[in-house]
Length: 233
Image (tube, rainbow, N blue to C red; front, side, top):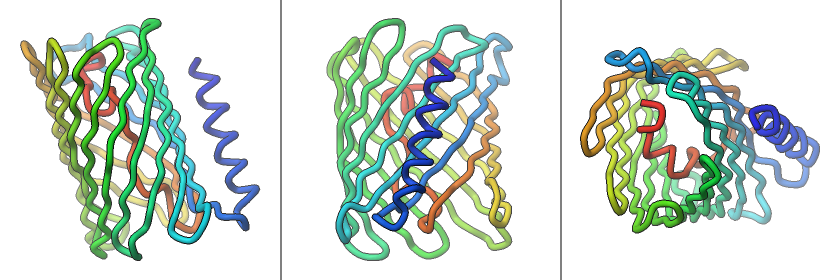
């Protein structure tokens, strides 16, 4: 499945570049590594690809493909999410999303609304969503943002909360990133995940390549395991 996701992500990016003159906005390829500081058996790697195309002026569509490889905890999961985006102006964008996660033969559907605000020094965004599937009565809410200091250096942070019938999870990350000129962006974070009966502090190392004139996509990835990180931590 890992190879399939990478091939699909590469195909999405190449296809988007091929139609750049017809509305290609941006794309991202990335990898995230997390490792618990409290339990050597917990950690994992996420691989992902995103692409966004502007259909008509102000209206865009994006696709996320993510593979969660819980290499330390064991097991894996996959996600596909589609976004419909409307740019109110050069600073504010709103949108809706629908995603599906797969894990151990089960599916989880999530859907919701989101917004992003470009305030010059950085971008703040948030979302709220619902879901169903192997878990019932899913409610997700989260926010993320960054602040640039110049020279490719930024502070980053995110907060995600998910509740469902039988459990909940809260994830918090803070850290910094460094973007090479015309190259990849590297990020380091310190995070904490808490569930009903457990809490873990972890470190995360991330790398991504943003493509296109927009420099990536308007919104972050969405999905159940983007908010609920307990399977890997």
